[in-house]
Structure formats: C-alpha cells, structure tokens
Amino acid sequence: MTRYVMVIDKRRCIGCQSCTVACRTWNDLPLDIVYNPVVTEGTQGTWPNVHRDWTPLLCMHCANPECVPCCPTGASQQDEDGTVWIDSKKCMACKVCVNACPYGMRDASHLEPRLHRFVRKCTFCRDRRQMDPSAKPYCVDTCHQKARIFGDLDDPESEVSKLIGSVKTERLFTEFGTDPQIYYIPELGGKA
Image 1: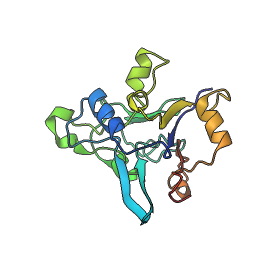
Image 2: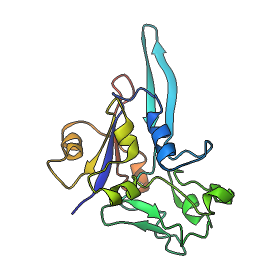
Image 3: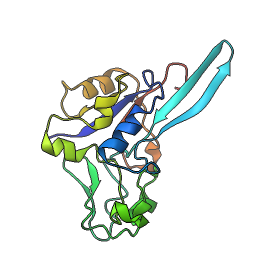
C-alpha cells in the first residue's frame, strides 16, 4: 500500500517562499490565494545567539480528515494513498469542510468568479502525479534548500520513511486526532 507524506526539514528552510510561488504558479492561483504559506516567528533570542524560525504550512492530508466525512455532496475525498482533495464538479461551496478543517488550510474564496465557485486546497499536486506517477509536488521540486521531502511512508526504503524513523519529527495539533501526514524536523535553534 502507498501512504504519501511530506517531511519538512525546518533546519534547511530559509523562508524564501519558493514553495509558495511554485504552488501558486502550478495551480494558477491569484496573488491573494495561498495554499502553501510560510510563517515566521521572527527573530528570537538575544545577540549574539539569535535565530529565525520558519514553518511552511499546507494541507496536512490527515489520515483521519475532519473535512471528508462532513461534506454533504461527497466533493471532499481521500484517495487510498492518503491524498485529500476536492472534486470541483461536486462542490457546492457550502464551506462545511472549511469550517471542519482544524488547520485552516482550505480556501473559501469560492465567491471569486474566476475560481469557479468551489473550495480549493493543496492536493500534493495530485494532477501532476496522475500525469507522471514519479512526479513530486511542485513545491518539493522547487525547494532549492531540499527542505521538503515527499514520498511513501509505507515504503521502508523511501527517504521519508528513513527520516521519520531516524530523526526527531513533530506534527501539528496531533491532539485533534486527525493524524496529520506532514512531519516537521525541528529547527536547530528553535523549540524542540
């Protein structure tokens, strides 16, 4: 079986926003829509021991997503490989899934006519992978610092599987019970 996950190595992330631009480019998003923001806590510490901490965010592609079972039309779906996505033909833009997502990673700008009146979100570039099964999400290919690693967690030989098994990783808000599939390797100077 395949279970896609992403590891984000915060030790390597420099907050350059290349992933944000790549995502916006691939998905042809207007400037005010961001599936892939990079959040900074700003400068921390006291001179000369200062550091910055960046946290790239995206849909967590939860193993137990809150957004899928609540969708009244079945537009919110999850593939067998764990990818959570929205069928735009079924979506009626009711925002139930937007309100259900504890991570706030669904875009509700469906009132914008050019967005075809449906909720949108990161899909791990599902369309790219359908064209080429070996393709990675565009944000992964674009990250020049190699801070994003994508792969099959169920494959013990994959880079993501080896990383998660060998270094300390964290996931956001695991207390929600959604089992998020984005793993973070903490930044060296930041909080562990």
